[in-house]
Length: 444
Image (tube, rainbow, N blue to C red):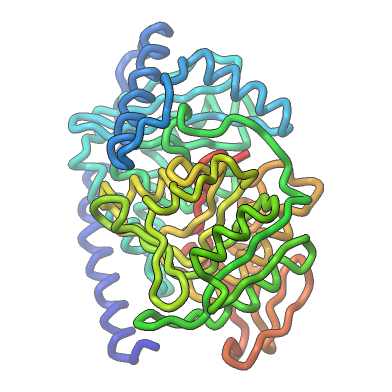
């Protein structure tokens, strides 16, 4: 718990940061310029170049060569068209490539020519301070609305130049494939002045389309392997974990392993003993600067599973559709940490991952996960991104809350143990609680 003095200093720091960032944004808030549209062949070639560039970055960071030849623009377009038919959704792929002299945007919509925008008023030196200011504000538990100003500016730079095309094709799902400095951006919390982005679109993040599983399967009936720890040595305890694991497996076939049973040996044993479609790990996890072995998932009694070890579990031979890490923290803005986070599904070999960019409160995580698994089972929901979108909207609209020691959501009320009791009514409307959670890899 923070002391009143600490809370006061945090609030004062946020206000001072807001003043500085207001001065920065005030000088660049005008709409960015865009050059004349490039010929269609040039845009298709550019997509292949971007795919190759980012594929090389991930292969280098993870010291692997698992990826094959980058997909062409036409192949990506046809794959999105197939996924639209299978999911009943309208997907669009957005490349956002920060460069020293401009922000480059490329939009791929099935059945349409790709669109390229080069925003010469948004060089990297202009973009980065606004990104950092947004991250500092939105990832803070201090209850202010100071995040809105940079959230609006980033929306104007990344989304607004493409919005007419998105609306013309009734797009409802945005798949972001982005470069350095944008890979740890909580896109769901960008704001158009009236609404958050997540209120308009489902959102997912991929490392590169060539590094993303293009196949589609429903998740409603998949068995869950739920493992985690509530007690730690040298780290903050997570008292809501037992309830979290129980809640997500309540209406599904699944197995729960807690604390002493949360070991690497048992994880290997369970993965090979049964066909689990979802693996849920409720524990501390860190995406840190440096090599992949510096980032890890915390196991029982101080043991760690680093990203190199994660790959060696041979997930690619298993039917795991979704890996969930429910208590992550990422070194926001660090290149290597961003590559580790955005490349989590590629590195592990699972189709999709759900993880948080910063560590949300224990009860906030419990609230989101209980609703998310309920939405996955909803027959109206056809993609993981849609399940996450519905969950995040329910949180920001105050439909998920704690009152009288009960957690209320669309599944009804659930009693909380004494260690999670709250005085008064607690809501999770602030983007600090819901925008940290990001779907990485296939959003379908």
